[in-house]
Image (tube, rainbow, N blue to C red; front, side, top):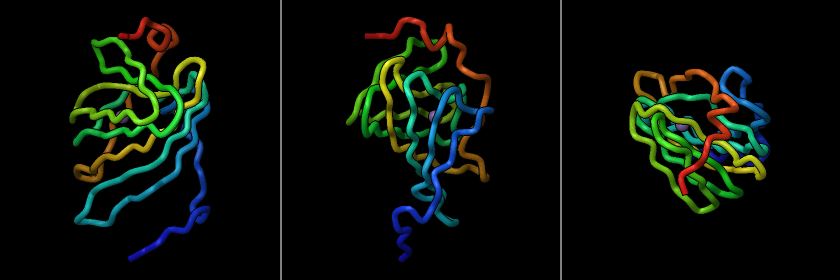
Amino acid sequence: MEIYVSGSRSSRRGEPEYFTGSVWREEIITAPAPARVRSGFARFEPRARTAWHTHPLGQTLCVLSGVGRVQSWGEKAREVRAGDVIWIPPGEKHWHGASPNHTMVYIATQEDLDGVHVRWMEHVSEAQYLSPISL
Ligand code: MN
């Protein structure tokens, strides 16, 4: 057993290549092989979001606090709130982030396939981010 005590691993800024706005990320686990699960916290300021991307084996998001948005390519964005759990299927192009006026924190969990857990694409434009959401 290994215990990673609180504060022993630094928070990291979301890289500007992959995120818009201020995002802080904290690792929960990158499990050693043969396990392949990875999970972490992500904390988004209002309007902050990921770029469009896919996960080869899908992703689960559990919203811990605040109000956020998630969108799959070709669909309207949807609002999500603390307690909501989102499953994103393998290969589905999507983004996730905070709502325009509120922060959002989630735990993201995904698995590696041949060492890859995410494939990054273009940023989410302002027009895409501000387009009407599905109610
Ligand atoms: Mn994702």
